[in-house]
Image (cartoon, rainbow, N blue to C red; front, top):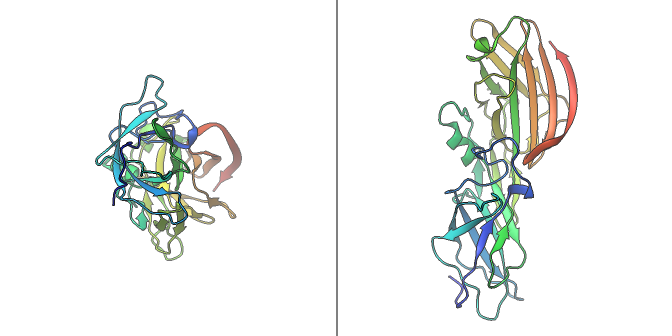
Length: 287
């Protein structure tokens, strides 16, 4: 049921994680903010001694202000403050996320992967108390992990060679795949990894400034393989270091210089929403 009252709930959305995106000026990958036109579901609950959950509503992200910091959320069905009660809210993106959430195994953004990528980007926001008569800002946080593979041409290669490269994560062998399903508790925002395994496909593009990104369910990645296949040169594989666990709202970047007989790999760990102050770990030459 909808809350009965005369005061409409006003909501807006700010930067994801409270941080401005620094690498995607048009926010196509939603690192630092939700894209205009995307939809979120908002659930309201009163804060009484016997809490009542009201009917959820879908809101659409509007145009951002001149500073690109805030965007109004427009509801499909207006929600109201209940008479005599205070309320709290939680919200999630995508708006149709279910109790089981699946990230796409194919997130190759040279095809239709932008859609697959965005649909895999589970985000969550909470607001413990909504204020009447003003716009309440919901701050969303990424609930998944992000991996980025940057391909660079080393000895014996050029960007032209790497333009036809295929990048995959994990293998089809049991125990070597990537978990792509998780349970999602909407009331708490808790994500719990599942047990299925798949091989994932990333964007196939090369260049020092090209980020081949994919969203991954938080999980242990120790021993998982990053496979780079170049037409005419076969496949070279980097094995992710032991003890590596992908955490929520965290970006893991692997800059791979492809050479004929070796891969040179540098790993960077950073907050997903902002990468200026990344903690960098040098791995060195792997053969």
